[in-house]
Length: 119
Image 1: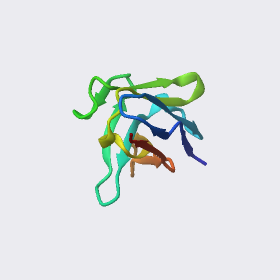
Image 2: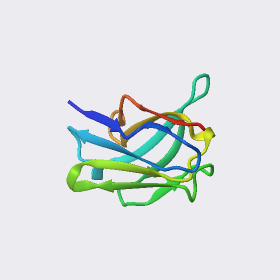
Image 3: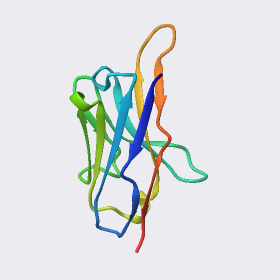
């Protein structure tokens, strides 16, 4: 059974930092595209950052230069280091693991962790 468990969320003030962790079980994260998404009520879930099997990273324009995604294959854990946080970063953050497969892609989600940026 595949599980993705996020942690590290919380409430911080603007300008502060947080590091989110996503621990995977049942899969090897280095064989998946791992991503962090976020969602606020009433809006679609959006991709924040992803890291490919080869280690290439991609970021949403809104977080470039502030967020860093990384992966520890030995721990099957993916991190999202968030710095210079802004109120608009407030959302539930979800970890995702995706792999192209036949007949259907493999796609797994964590339960989410709340990040609140407020003064």
